[in-house]
Amino acid sequence: MPFSTTFETAVNHAMLYEVGGFWKLTPDVMAGRISTDAQKKAVGYTNDPNDPGGETKFGIAKNSHAQLNIAALTWVDAKNIYYNEYWVGASCDKMSPRVAILHFDGCINNGVSTASKFLQRAINVSDDGKIGPITLGVLNKLDPILVCNKICDYRTQYYKDIVNARPSSSIYLNGWVRRINEMRAFVTDPRTIF
Image (cartoon, rainbow, N blue to C red):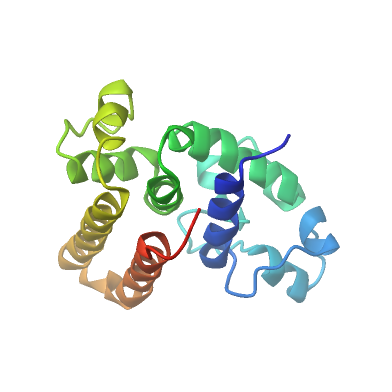
């Protein structure tokens, strides 16, 4: 299936966080091989019993995809999941590229409903967590850079609220905020053309 350039940009950028800054499509990564520690690292494969997401590969977690054989997941499989559940499922395909890329990252990082609420709050519409024609109508009339900045503000506050409620999570705060700040810089740079 041919994907839009904006989706390709979004999913490859998200992999920098879901897999790591060394993200690179090699034949082993494309096949989802996990026989060696290096292969596991290259696809972001983890199976830590202390991780609430459970077994994870390419950022796709078993707890959200119980029917999947995560160990056998290929990059094509993962990409199709990202496209169907997060790109089309969250209406990113109906947004300006800047907002779409940021919203896609939020859907992966916070879940589709929560990310959709952040977007809706940023544009002052009812935050039901479902992107429909009213949300899209308002969104697509606004300056994408201003919308992206507001979404990032909501995402940052969300993580600060988690740490306030559960101080033991403070060890993750810098990483969470770094991801948001890097995404903000990526999608709001007026010199970048998507």
